[in-house]
Image (cartoon, rainbow over all chains, first blue to last red):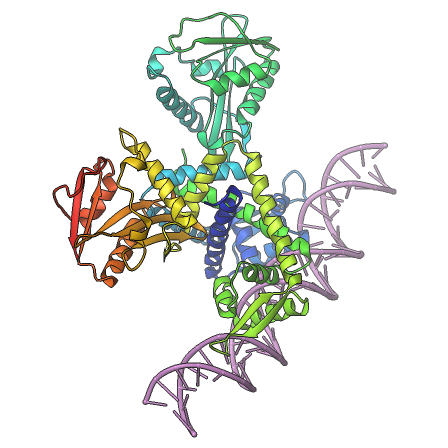
Length: 290
Length: 290
DNA sequence: GCATATGTCTGACTTTAGTCAGATATCGTT
DNA sequence: AACGATATCTGACTAAAGTCAGACATATGC
């Protein structure tokens, strides 16, 4: 009925008025929006004044005045940066912390109200993840983290769940050669996640082996983030880490049911090789010399 | 990893910055945002000044000044309303129409660019429909229309496609007793669609029969709009139309594969009756006395 | 016909946001 | 110590948005 462009514009209209409502709800605390935004940026951990200015896109004069007004209210304190006394850092006072919490409560309530109206909660959340990832398409940041951390565990859990859905015979981690976490920590290996505003969108593991090669394991991209080139970025980061660790040969195994993955490998310089392990799940094996 | 509230808030952040970008793109035509918004509201068919004021949430003084500035630019003309000379109606001049088209081109380009970045186009559009419908949950307007109109045809097409997906044996319209469009037009019957900002979100038909009852047919709610109570609103509207037409008994047939529909009927005063036709698809039959 | 309500407009005002040119202090480099 | 670069601040300004009281014309109910 509606063409794609009209559907995007219908979405824009709906969202514009919702965002407007969210903004005006912030006015209820008797502070102009600009000051409220700065206070919230500080509350969310941005302490460096220049950083806040860039994030909010403010002129330095305006920023300075907003900081002064928050200081006059007794909500923040500014001090010189330890390393560079030209830069200033801002912190919430106890009163500021209380005020920030009040803004947080408003945001949380609105989010909760929105969810509570709808019965298709999971579908709605998945749709929001998808759109937020698409809008912030350059926003995912790759971080090297411990494979035993919460973020890594979450990614691996999603990865295993997806394998279980896509393999005809299902998937049981215990039957697979689950890489030891220690093999994916420097200096033996590495584990990289893609984070977008707090949500992990993908991961990849570089697993050191006792042989003369390392393995790429657990490449996963969240459904909400597919088609954004994240898989490629993760693989590039893993290769970079491998080079840094002096690894000359990479191998990986995969399953032909994961067609996108196979395509990615072929397009990025991997060549198919014979089976090099006895894991029951993979049926395709690749190698790449760095 | 993230709790539902955090996921909604992540969405809000992503969307807020996107909306900001859309707003600033409107500034390129040398007109403040307020005036641009009024011009666009008029271009989209809102001619009544009071209506525009409510829609944009403007003070009457501010509204008046914005209208004046657009008039001075030669983009709009205002005249008194025919029925009530206190009210004013605003219309685009040819120059205003050109300017409006320029804004439309900006919006269309942005929507197109957004879509072109993403490979999961259909998933993205479905997600946008879902969220737009959820946000504008009170926004769907029920209209009585001709069952042969484009909107009605679209709804019926989606309805048949869904039956084909959900019935084990598939669905072929030709095998079903397809109601003649004439039976769903007053004074014999009625056809009602739920429209939300240009997108049809659901429909229901009231089909007059030669017997002493009328039938409810083609109750459908778009996947994007389920859980919002739209099915109930459509059924209520159909019953209201039936009462207006002096119909005392309603019947309908359905299939047990459509569980939500059966639940709705049972909850709203319908009672199960024996099969009253030989259509091959339905296996459940209901009646309601008005 | 009159009182009251309604829709729009005007004038006078305030607040918020944003801009720009210096002033000031500090840093890194030579 | 002197230099230019950098980070922030201050003052002086403008534009845009929003508020409010009252004016005016027109509609509605009695």
